[in-house]
Length: 176
Image (cartoon, rainbow, N blue to C red; front, side):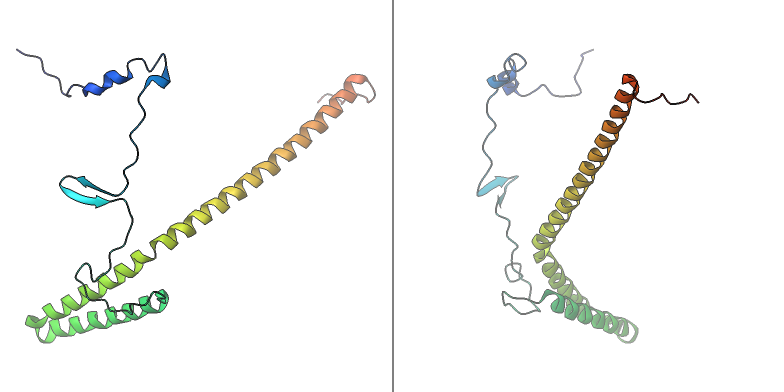
């Protein structure tokens, strides 16, 4: 009866770290970060974060293609249009059930446009979230500093009273 391991043996480059305990600087440097396009599982990816346009994805864009988009207005417009199409879909399903496919495609197109608009707001959301987190962190640190100052003053007051009691300048406190 042969004994087999549940896990494969470690990769051969683990030997590069054998003297790490004695000399941490003996370990090899990590590889540099990947920059530009790279292959992963047969697909090509890039390190640049770029939101592909709807046209690149083969989807018709329902809002203006200008660089200065009023996101609030366009999201509201698409939302109203979505509500209208859903109501029309409900009517069609009641009156002519065989003709629902076109309305479903229209609703899918509206959802894709809404999704694209929301994804284009993600960088702004990330910046706003980071700013909020940093402001909270600053506020917590200020509160901690104030708490430390208050406790330091209390400790100095207690030390001063203790020194006066030890020097005999003030009668000791009655025992409870």
